[in-house]
Structure formats: structure tokens, C-alpha cells
View 1: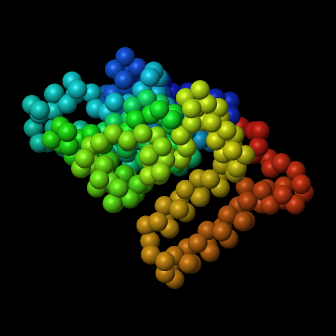
View 2 (view 1 turned 90 degrees about the horizontal axis):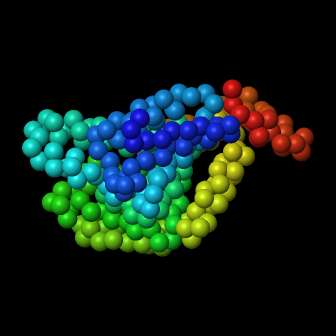
View 3 (view 1 turned 180 degrees about the vertical axis):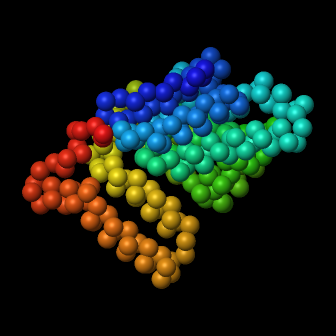
Length: 264
């Protein structure tokens, strides 16, 4: 891969690192395709426990590559649609990734980069990071990422920041819910490791099931069908091998088998 570095460590922690620091990690059809491919392959990796999305250099991502955007000016509707569909596939793949996802943000995160952040389960940023839904400045709209932005920061706030294209800082991003914590840049990696350690202490199958549960609950009304679904889920998990191990370990006052072990 040209602009994406992929790694899985001995703990089962995968890292996807945007690797165009000289271009502020802007993305185009090549990087989008690389991300889609990597997410597809990692989703099927049996040893994977969680995924970290990060970037090299001073900035997380300044959004779309200007050369790519310039090419889009001369493309047909069908060509533009195909590229937009690829970006939409990336966002959905990240949003529905079966394992916990962590996003580490530094510097600038503009345009479509906010979609990547919103699609991750947990996001942390340096306290001097800057964010912007910049599309309308170029006469465009944040179409593909809009469902994830509305879902993450709400309809009302998305209306403001998508229409004004104003920059906002990490403190505001945390207030809006786009990120979960803003920390000094020197503490960013330590904070990331704290979250990784916290997640690795949990049942990997339970976390995957939890993601699916929450997505289902969010998409359905609170009615008898949802009540039956949630009751079935906890019953199913309790009798699963991991659920049984977790409960037995708790009552035996010992660590569960998945802690400190790599999945096989």
C-alpha cells in the first residue's frame, strides 16, 4: 500500500496509519481504496481484538487531496458518483467494523476526516487540534459523512458547523461529542494506551456483540420487539463460551482467560 501503514501487534491490536505527512494526510481514491481493503481484511482476522486509526506527521488529515478534487472537476456525473460511493463504502466499513475502534487525532482534521473520526467508537485528540467541516467553502456539501456527523454531534450542531464551515478546537469537539477526550499532545500516546489497556481487559467477543447490540438498539423503536431482542441477547451471551468463562472467573476471583492472551 502506498499511503497506508498497517500493523497488528502481539496483543491483537491493529493500527491503520495514514502515511502522507508531507501532504498533511489528505486522501484521494487511492488512499480510500487502501483503507477499504485494509478494513475488509482486518475484519476477517481471527486474532484481531481492536483497531487504532491514526496518522503520521503534524496533522491527522486536511481532508481531500486538491489534485484529486481538480480531477473531479473534469469528470462526468457517473465518475463522480463512483468515487463518492467508494468514500461511502469506507465510512460504512469503519462505522460497522466488528471490533472496537480508536481514533487518535493531532493537528488539523478537516472535511472528510471528520467522518473518519465520527465513525470510530472512541476518539481522542491533542488539545491544540483543529476541526472543520469545510466543504461549503468550496461550493460543496459534506454529503457522504453527514449521516455520521448527525449521528455523532446531532442534527442541530451539524447544521451550524456544516453551514458556517467555521473552525473549532478540541475543547469544543469534546463538548459536541465528536471526540471523547482532549489531552496535551505529549500525553496523547499515553492516553491512547490507557484506552487500549482498558479495552483489552474486556471480553473480545462481548465487545463485538456489544457493538452490534447498540447499533440495533439505536436503529429500532423501544417496543416489544426490541425488548425481546435485548432479552435474547443477554441470554445468548450468558451461555456463550466467553460469557461462561467471564462469569466463572469473576466468582473464582481470577482473571478471565482472554486477559493477557492473544486470540487464536
